[in-house]
Image 1 (cartoon, rainbow, N blue to C red):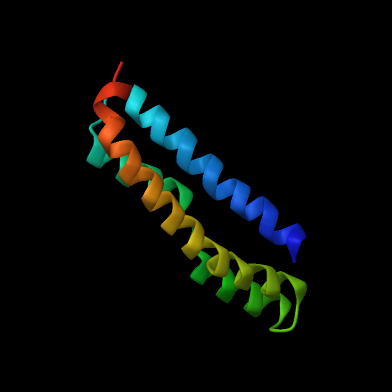
Image 2: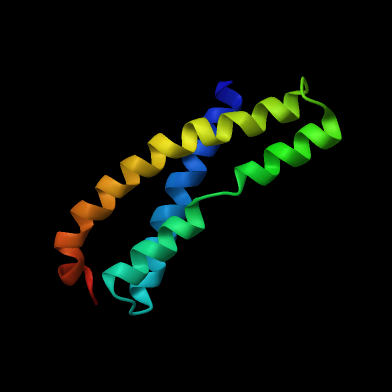
Length: 96
């Protein structure tokens, strides 16, 4: 399970932070920057689960891996909401 969980958690954080600071550097305001960062870091796990079960079967490792994603995504994104709220106060200072 850790072989699936660790890369997913790293992916969520990496995509969020890279997108947040890239969009900020492009001159977007806080609301736009945050919306794009969360859009970039989230996934369409519902579709992935359906495809994995249809192709590989309900008891496959592929189907198991797609179920782990949403279980990790929610707490990670809640953590990133707290990060975004803390950055909101510093956003004006981060503008270049």
